[in-house]
Length: 135
Image (cartoon, rainbow, N blue to C red):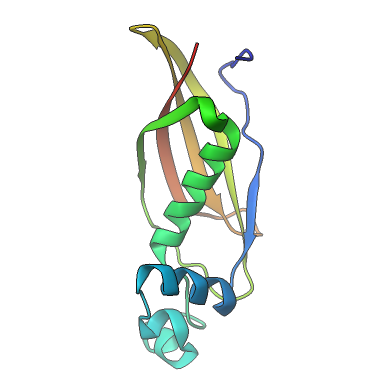
């Protein structure tokens, strides 16, 4: 396993938002909620258009971690706060930084600060995670 240092950044994980993505996610999760599919419903809820599911951002956090740690790791914990909606046409990017590395019972644990950000760099979903990596 390669060296992991505090301050190391994860590769960016980027996705475009919009109805096609939300529709695929809704189909898998039976989440055809009007605010996620219809612009008028999104506007009635106070947004510029329909907006993406919070749990889709949660899935993007998982994807970024899985891509980074590969098959030799597992997510021990992940928590986030949904602070902003992703509306049509946004580019969402998950960023992450290693904040701690330790060993417990022969397992390397890595703590991370993560965020889902929009194309202007605004954080929509701050998060923290701990992953276990084979040593």
